[in-house]
Image 1 (cartoon, one colour):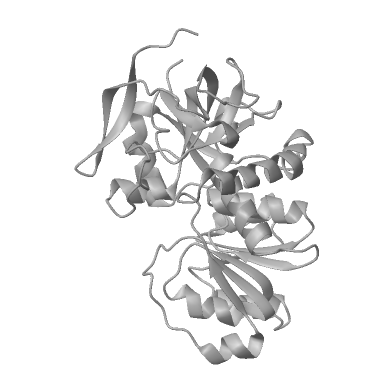
Image 2 (spheres, rainbow, N blue to C red):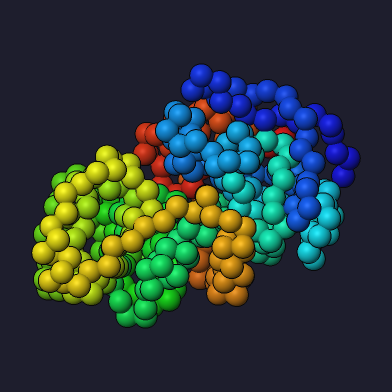
Length: 329
């Protein structure tokens, strides 16, 4: 494949997404250059565009945390990757462009039964969900899990993965249609948080026992309510904050129930940490793609030049599943 010296990229200018031309990046040691075919749109991209989530030191200022495409150039020590390989990759930035560099250790083969567009919905959500519900949240077979935002990219991934590993899954969502969407994906129950109190609903569903694990992206006033929903020895994993970052906490609840409260962000972690997740996904999740027990849920696609429209859809919260950008091929 002929590599151009100039590429189209989407740059943030005064809070707006603007298509511009930039030089094609050059892979460093341990990196590869990927001709981007598709890129996932994620909530952190929207936050960064608004100036609320600055990229980590050394990351590209271009948005985009997950891509699929074709390896077109190799840096030194690029592992077993070869030019022409079709891969999906987790990146710290740079995905909203025709070309993007990625760490070789964070590139995974695209499952044979998935397209570039479908596979673009894998890296950010599946790395995040695996790390937080299995590695950090220690979800076990037969346990109960509550995920907020069940129709989001994180939510749809959580429902599928938790069910694939024989957990019982409850989800909250903001409409009857979204609740039904979660149920169709395999959720055991779905709660419309706009018309129902999820605390009382979880109490009913679990016979007042509560759930073993909660994956939360909301924060704010959800935090004390989450503690009420947890069972004895329950775990809360906080992975984002869409409300305010501060909240009240009843320490008696934590002590009496012997709760574990933890949280994480993935983007700032080093490649060694992320590569460990990649190896676990390849071993444990890639066979589930092959058997079609799980799949990335794609809501809609936009051309790269329409990134602003994709962000508008993300902010509207009308989507169910992933939003994907596609490049000209």
